[in-house]
Image (cartoon, rainbow, N blue to C red):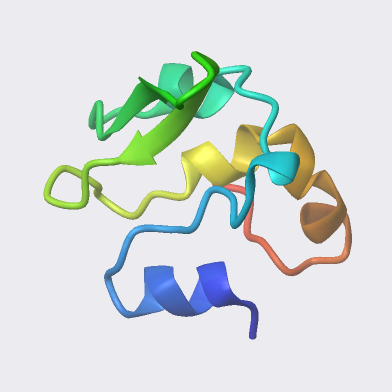
Length: 83
């Protein structure tokens, strides 16, 4: 079971990226979040990256379903894509 599936099963927010190389800052996850649990925060160079507000996250995984960097995991069946 992958980390995100385990997190969602335990009622914890998903991990959107583990390092900046795995996020392009496109804000697709921010735009799709129905709970508005994602904010885009600037790093030290001014690039925006998503941060999950844990208290607001409803664990729907929509953020993962739109992430271009998670497409390979979806294709392999590791991530569930909500209807």
